[in-house]
Length: 177
Image (cartoon, rainbow, N blue to C red):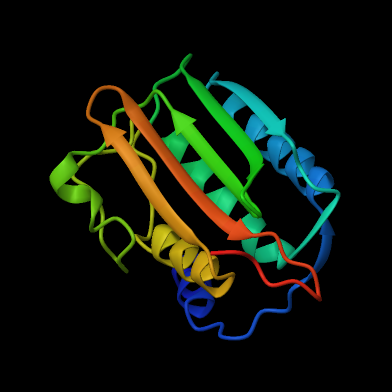
């Protein structure tokens, strides 16, 4: 119940403070968190960071919350001894984050609903893990507040890749579209 209330409160955040953050520090911290979570199911966790800027303007708690949710989902829907990959790279003035699992995958006809509040896929977690059905809706909201976009590519039986991008901003130059 407390998790549900916390999740609901996150949906109603409107203003987020964006400030300059060390991209590599956040990525390394999140990789450690993802690796720790993956270990709970004996899942291999690999990370890759390519061409990262020193700093970017974003809301660190929000981006960490999104990544925590993507890591948690990847673990929930993956079998023991499988693999999760976390990557971050700079592309066209954007930071692109991806979390790929070799889990159960999501039917194509359900993928467009994934980012809606209280919607859950028919694919069930591998060990009966629970969720509120709000994590991806909150993630979408946080990414949109950063002027970015979140998406999924998935195939049943082959796993999923959840990706999002946020603009790399500085105080004087808006991102190129």
